[in-house]
Image (cartoon, rainbow over all chains, first blue to last red; front, side):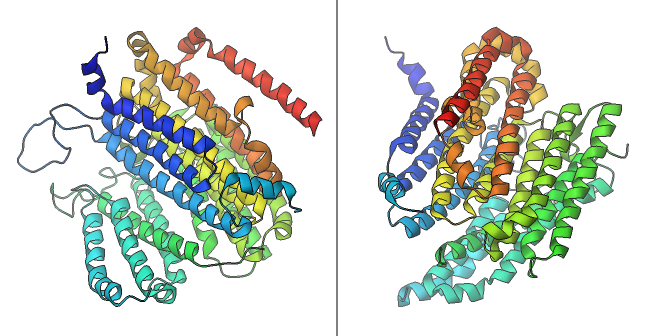
Length: 125
Length: 143
Length: 304
């Protein structure tokens, strides 16, 4: 008997793992280089989802202190601060990978991995 | 691109985008945002200017000499703030123990070290984004 | 003591050198090489002083910003980390001295300064990874290291360099994301990011949530295995090392790959602890994979 309430309560974590596997499959097998960069982005998004949903406290407020509010329960702000740094890292990796793809396209003329390997195999360097 | 509507709207909107980015940088310790987000917004405004007016106008607005000096200056400013902490007897990047003025809670001029460091980070991120964009667009021959 | 701030001085020296290098406009002359050697030599001498001081006195924790242990980031400076820092800086000085003569043959003249800036950032992130005692700080330094080591391969604009660097970047990012997933799983059950603080609570966590610790160890070891090129996950290594410029290849195979093995040792023994590692018998698996790497490396080399 499937325990529906356990699945619905933890749907964030299940979604994060499903996205992780989808991104991993795309990076490892897709022939187009641009889709591989998108696959890496999907993997990193799944990690961010997992991290942020760790810090959630049910029935609590956003962690911004408004004056004259007294003692309240706040959501844990530490995972969100870590994910800010993680997003910057993901953006810089994507920027670097895209500039590499531009240079690869200039020198090979294509961005499909099988055609690049065919040109590598038959060309003289 | 040579579209008249895009050029006019860009010329009107870019100062407001930069003002909003500066607001997010300065209020980094009170509300969400901070250095990265504010710097990305200012960088995006410069990218919009380059896209609407072409590469030469973009180079005149953000020349390479100035952006490389802002990048270096951002990191040197951050390291200098950290070394103040060592000179005053605490550890690197010490805040209250290094004697930075704390101020009252909820103002802009509070929190000691944090607004100064956020300013450095914000300008550095903006100049990095515009440098990356110009380097990606310029064509340079490969041998 | 005089050397309490020495780890920070080494890191600051390398970072300032990395940032000041691209501003130069003058030609590539002996004055520039002398300045690079001065910065590196100063860092090497400081790390030697730190190593001698730590072995005579005791090891210490360095808290950034004077925050206490649970909230802030700290560096653990003991004999292991200061010895590794000295070895890394010594080998890097030798490689940079070799690179002075070799770089004009491989790169175009307007790329020389960028190459040295990348090398300084690489050394900065490696020393940060060796010293740190905080799991997320480890991840940040690991990403800086991954990007700069891809940078020193692809700086040589030939076609096969670009392809090898792209493959290294993709596989390296898969490794980093796996390690971050493992760190998230450890943070989820212990509530601490500090390695020493997580170690104190891990004994009770192992009774309550054994599956979390197992999955997180699986992710972390897979990610570190991709980046350290252990046997089944080493496919990016031959392309990246054969096409790179020679000093980059020396830096990569000699230093970068080994720092990840140090990190594996740090995580396994400082966070998880010896009892749990022996109970899961991870050390047997690691021994099998290490032996397989050595044998398969020789087998593939014969086939060439």
